[in-house]
Length: 193
Image (cartoon, rainbow, N blue to C red; front, side):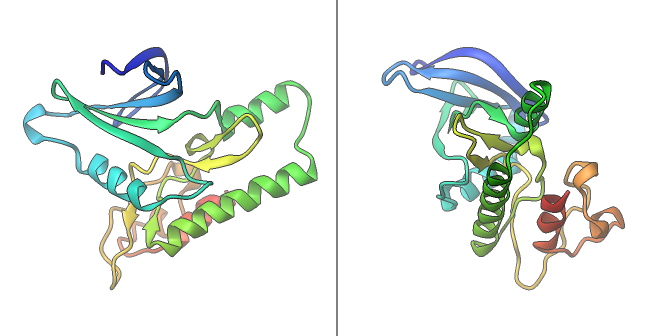
């Protein structure tokens, strides 16, 4: 981790801790996700392997860019482009200023979200955790889909999947009913929420 200087902790989840960091060579600000190992003897979590492989196939302006993967001193870090806010914080910030999104801004956000989800689906990827906290917003109000830790490649024929994914508020009816065979519709439902 000699190439990066941690600036501040910006998030924490089941699979790790995310820091705002600076690339010491270029000065670029990045997001550094330190992967949490449940048991060092188990190796890299399968969710992390999936996230890396999915992000390597999803190169699009509305999807977060994975810049690097670093394994050092028995620690794994994913280096991402840095964006200022997630959609929830962005909307809270606008609301706290007694403002609203204009029709044009709202249309742009919806269009970018639909574009990112469509791109994932066209590449056979289910995100499976669409929620405002996993949609990042840059300083120009552009959206980027992030956090593919629960993402999966859709199987043909339909594969049996875990039904206990997606944050409850955004979970589709088939997941709430315990279905283990589902497809892209789970993301469409979450997007509508």
